[in-house]
Image (cartoon, rainbow, N blue to C red; front, side, top):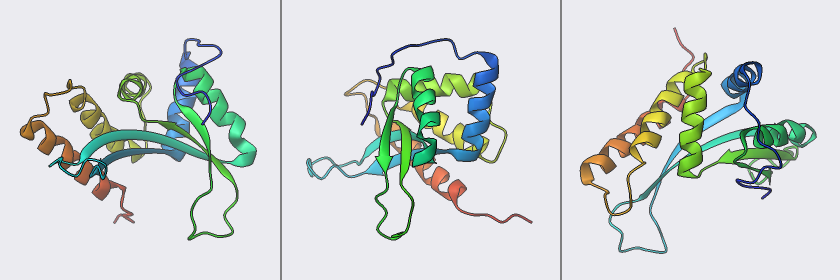
Length: 165
């Protein structure tokens, strides 16, 4: 993992770059909400909730992901080629953001530079969950948990292939 949260230089995104980043995300981005049981703490009654944003590129386009990480000033770029179901798959890299405060920064960025594809609907669900997950430790109410869990389910359904009319 390279440079999570560490940037050699941080600059303002700039309007042109911000719109480019939104367009790149429209085509290559993934907004994910995770709900998983913590196996190290089986006494927890509710699964752990989390948000993740990813962009993947072939290894020969890794510099694009490095530029994104450096421009944003957060996230990490890591090698990704671990799918045993695709034995001939080419090497790839992934830019990933999973820290809550960094996901909140992405929400602000995509509010300023909106997405235009089907991914805009995915982003809206993801952003609602990121906002709801801003709670402090110890304030996890069942109502709030159920709200985020419902968003996890909605996002999964929205990500399924739908050929349209």
